Length: 325
Image (cartoon, rainbow, N blue to C red):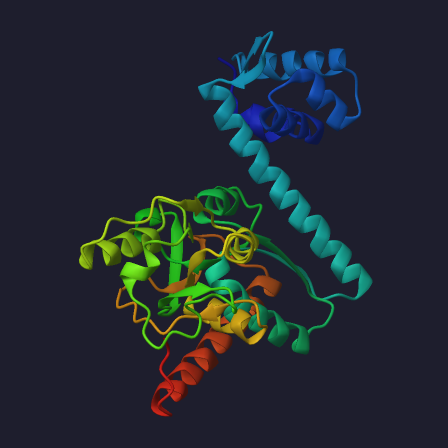
């Protein structure tokens, strides 16, 4: 076997890395060639060249497409990490050249987007209007792998304990309760005290099975001696949630901050129904040992400020006799 350190440091070129990532994305020589604007024979030739460098089979070829081997998966992870660092450095240099202050990429869950992240972005823009913030919405299962390979600088969302790992650095910002919502003209929207028995008969749009909020919701039904609804749609997308609430007259289970924000827009109605459950806090996740860029560090400071202001606002609502749910 050749010197792997020499291959990774010296022999692999940018075009090799781009091809490996494209093959992993498309799992097909032809589609990878089309994406890279080269011929399929050129892709095959370059892949053979890379495999000779390592003296290893990186992808299995078949009539159905290509599949990375265990060696290939390791090399693809390396390629993604290098390309992410390359893209970040390129963007930072371009930002400095254009007079901008930098760029940061954030992965965000819906629970943190309207009432935390957008406030923090507003604070950041007030300090530095030309700082670019790229926001990608999703859930932990989709966003954490991208954080690990460097395609994202920061994750903001609920700190699910099942996803804790030694390579991740977490910082809790505040607790975020849940609530039940319906469309504003729903029959239960103005009910003085809707019951779980009434809710179990409705169609629901609920968080994905892995989410702690989903498990807690099901426990609430069991607590009231009810079988959880069978007519459900599972999603981590707020757009899908809102569409189900409006088009199917479904009940939704949302973070209170998100629900209050969109209730103010006239899109949903928060039911007068206590939801006494405990969930992981909302916070930030970064990679251990990876120094944040100046723009990312600045955004993190703004997130802390926005979280503190939000906590004060929630406390004030409670003291004024306006219940949070």
